[in-house]
Image (cartoon, rainbow over all chains, first blue to last red; front, side, top):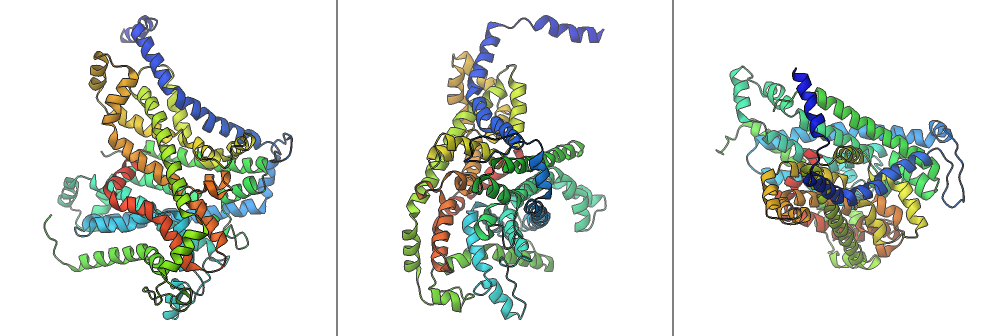
Amino acid sequence: MAEAIATATPIVRKPVRSAAERQEARAALALSLPAMVLLFVFILLPVALVIIFGFTDYELGYAGFRFVGFDNYADLFTDRTFRRSLWNTTVYTAIVAPVSIFMALGLAMLIESENIGRSFFRTAYFLPVASLLVAMATVWQYLFHPTIGPINALLALGGLPRPNWLGASTSVLYSLSIIGIWQSVGFNLVLFLAGLTAIPRELYQAAHVDGARSAFDRFRLVTWPMLGPTTLFVTTISIINAVKVFETVKTLTEGGPNKASEVLLFTIYQEGFVYLKVGYASAMTVVFLIILVVLMFLQYRIQDKQVHYS
Amino acid sequence: MNAQAFTFGRAVRLSILIFGAVIFLAPYIFMISTAGKAQSDIFSSSLSLVPQHWSYVANFTKALTRVSMTTLLWNGVVVCVLIFVFQVIIAIPCAYAMAKLKFRAARLMMVLVMLGLLVPIHATALPLYVAFDRMSVLNSYFALVAPFTISVFGIFLFLQFFRAMPDDLIHAARLDGMSETGIIARVIVPNAWPAITAFAIFSVVAHWNDLYWPLIVVSNQAYATPPLGLLYFRAAEAGDDYGALMAATLIITTPLVAAFLLAQKRFVEGITMTGLKG
């Protein structure tokens, strides 16, 4: 009975679209038309073209191109530069994302529980986010300089070994990771601070009454679960940003020495815009897009499963 | 806020925070100090922060003459302003239609917007470069600005914000005989300043700092943006003239850092809002 009514109502109402409704729909289409046209021209169409180019041997400067099927992808598998580049990007992400997340969480909790100098600390840690990365990378290059850099001067004072930070293939990726962490902690910190302030005080009192005496218990029972959505978001954004590392590599190392700092976007940039191998670089771009899609998909899946306490 | 007792735990906490802050600020301190050092100071005493021979004037002159800093900063401002203005003019009407008007395409558009959120400029750069090359529009403000005139993130952010606005406001305006564009201009925009400011900060920080796209479409100093210009300056400044390099770095970093220090509260609010909802 109820079902019959539920299905019956829309059937009766659907064809009756009043003049006002039609007018509203027309206005809506007109208002969103510019955005949709640009979305098509600058996002959807280029993505479709990248996928198509990925199956061709298109090179800029040559007249035509042939479809070569999966040849580009087969080449990618055996391309040592590309494999190196994927591996380096993974290592960089595996260092920068977790360290910048946990460092930001720790610092946010320290700042939150302290009542002097809050805005000073927030400013100090956030400053790198508002600074031009290419410029600050240049400063880091000076700090890391093997002979005249302040870091090695300090290490020499302590009688410690002085690594050739950005110049040695064994340490270059770690040095870039340090810059990456320095640059992204502030962003995560601000998000965590917002998340922490949103936790109701009563929850901590309730946890205390229920026997959560130590600071660690309070963290485990209240802070961590309540921060869940923030942590998930910060994690996704940190991973995506780390996968997109480019500025520091282009400015400081150009992928070197000996391809030790070759990362995904830098390899795509070199193949596509320096060697102008559009087809091959497009196949790499498709791999890059797949990585982003998988990351976003994982985020949605975890978000759906997550228990919401708010 | 009652004063906390000065316990051992608190001392440890403050020490960690201060130590961390010093590390995070160290690059700025060395940048300012080295920008005033003569070449001989840089080689002999890298740990002393006060220059022995004050060379701020010499280093800044070098930085300002090798590459036209004013052109760079001007290009940065023009590109960021154009991008932001187009993004807002295009995203707000679309977001308003999707949030407050009923039409059949709305659901499909939502799917397209969510898909668009996934796609960064790095993924669309190749076909856009090929097209711009064919159209001979490389090395122009058009090439720098056009791909960013559509911000799906902007649509998404405004959509969230508009949904929370009361419908009564819009109904009242409609009863007064306002057109939909009139409603956007006189009802929606005046009530959306928090979202617009937040988006402005997000957009300007992103495009002022972007290196990837300018590097691809600009090969000519006349249209170089600040990050690209700094790359040119580094190339022109072969060797270790760190004094001049730091002076150039200081000039180029200052505008956004100053803006941040002046409008800190808005910055943080903006990042939290765009961050959490993005």
